[in-house]
Length: 316
Image (cartoon, rainbow, N blue to C red; front, side):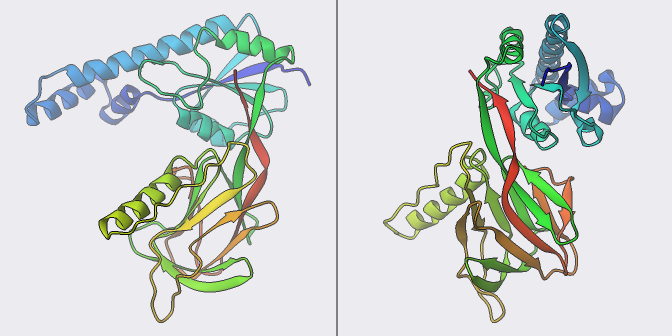
């Protein structure tokens, strides 16, 4: 199917956020300088960095618009509008920003390819950002010609018993919105037990080097601290792996809670089911975005598995 337009997804810079908070740029600069003064640092350095970062980003967006307009119609969409934006099958999506922008955008797509552009390679590592501003037009032309290499990245999906659902590019958190313990029943591999923990993490292949790896770092650190010899290795999952990994964080054994089911690998034939035992504040959110969540309170059942939808990321 031919593409009709490029949807250029942008994000607010940190300077934009400061101006929104303090109403004007001079007031934002005054706040930054005051903060530096209280810490005994030189004035102006931090704000100058915010300004430079902002200018570099805006220049990248402006240049992208200029070089892409002769190829296809370009429509700008700022990240905060993604939940209400309706992508069509003929949209070619181009993100310009950090890796998190790719993650945020992917959950609103249904097969549309993403060309992810790094606007500032000197300061952004960009694991998911294979293109610079200068290389983006070539990637668009190759995609239009059917010559662009595309990687299909697996995503996780949670389905609730009330019909709601949520996608995750990197990972899910299932637990409670405060620092208190989450209470739920876990059903896995034919077993069932009530648990009390600080929540359950479900990771995709793309997210396996993030939150999931930190859990293994913690486990290995505890082992070293108490003289354990064995070292645990985090699963190495490819981005297109049709497996997910779940880990129960800090499970607590009591008269009413067990700790036997603490981890496992979810496949297309094996899903994870959780039943909430919490009267309030139970939540499920994905990719660290706590504001975009599903309620997980008593009476809620969540089934976590691989999504049929995948992120199609242009590479090479």
